[in-house]
Length: 203
Picture 1 (cartoon, helix red, strand yellow):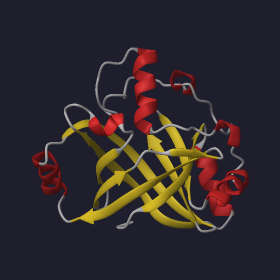
Picture 2 (tube, helix red, strand yellow):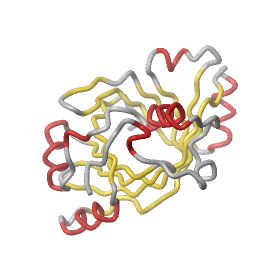
Picture 3 (cartoon, one colour):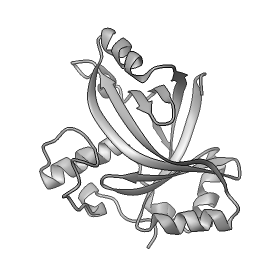
């Protein structure tokens, strides 16, 4: 996604992620990318200019290193849509130093395991985060709801918030004081959807 494109997606919190994977395989979905650990660094200025504009500057490390910029999102028919510019960089550490040299600083680190499937022209991401499991469906707006129904996900339980926003809700509800959403930070903490003001989309 080197050029600015619209990213349209819907996200669900799920009780049983394996159930979703089994359903995808029964539907003959194509495994696009196997389960991979992602480390994401989110940047902002010291005065949080990007955050105030609901924009995102992110550096991600998985099998590659990717630099991403996202505009403010718009909610459309239950999904989120925003312009996204993303491209691969050769060196994660050098890219981090480059961004910091421009005056940005790391304000948030989050980790997740992601498995990606292709199905009916969409990408379906199975995300394992320290505070729970999620399914993201990304593609054309008119395809999102039918695919959610194929996976027996409750559309009304869609989550209109980023992983960062959910983490902030969790910090408030549980009184957490650490900055980053890492598996190490959550190894002794049990989290429930209600802690983030969301609900399971499957059972």
